Amino acid sequence: MNKFFLIALLTFSFVACTPQRSVSTSTSLPVSPTSTATSTPTETSTPEIVPTATSTPKIPDQILNSPNGEFIAEFDNAYSHPAFEPQIIKILDKTGSLLWEIPYQHKTAMVDPHPGMSIYGWSKDSAYLYFYYHFSPDGGDRAFWWDGFDLQRINVQTGEIEQVIPGDKESFVAFAFSPDETQIAYTRQQDNPSIFYIRNLVTGVEKTANVIASVQNYIRVGSIVWSPSGNKIAFQTESDDYVAQTIFLDPSNMKQKVVREYMVDTSYFDGWSDDNNLGFLDIKGGMGYIVHLNLKNGEIVEIGTPTPQP
Image (tube, rainbow, N blue to C red; front, side, top):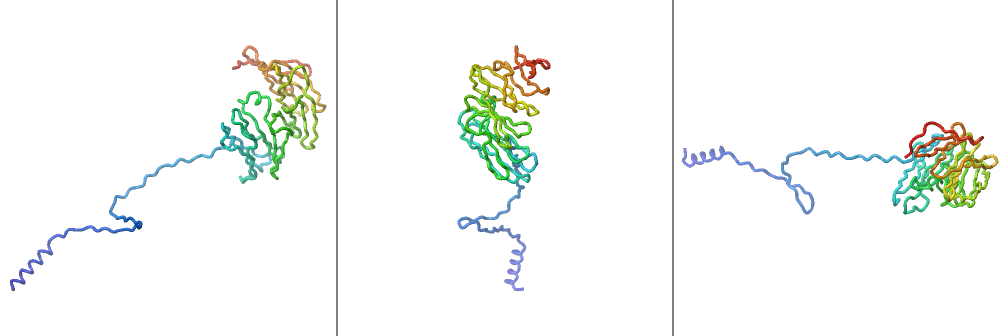
């Protein structure tokens, strides 16, 4: 065999049997015109699942269904100081579709207490929604003697809004609907001397009478309560020397009669009792006594056991 051929054959066999070193290659991926990313083998990881907090929608402060079940009135008071949140009454149909919105209509006082908007209630025929403005209990005398101001109602079919009690919209009023809701009795702070009104909401006919006058100057006339039968009314007055009077009024003829007189904070008028008399909570020696006043003979009867008062 040729010597040179034998050497070449041995050299080729040696190279073929030598292990070759592997070289990894990479692939360039275009990311943006100004940068280039290189794909390299990476360890895959499972993405961490972070729980997200779900917010529960705030339930409105007032939700009132109409008597016929066709409408819903909603209101979120948003009472705060200053009153940053809008106060809006919403009227929806029974499917939840918005029909009307009633925004806060007055200038909000930047002092406490300031008045809040409120739904008063539906008319029995579901034709009207009544609303008004009132003070929270921290409104002092204004909250407890007067019901609020600017009582209005909206016609749910047309959206028309009308003032129920005429006069100064910023003037405090006390009011109460008769049990059958055909009449409204009211007094107004703006009247001097004080006047008691009863208006028939069906016919519009109105009756008036000056509140019984005395040597005292009435600074508040309110807390109007109809009897369950609707044929009697009782209301309260307070004079500037802190004397309170409970007055009985006959709606048929507007005649009045003072049935009880006492110092403020010694007794609290509690409306009509189940026996068709007037109920009071009398305070004596730190104890509370529930008493009933018989309108026919003026007799006062103590009911139950006295309870300690804070």
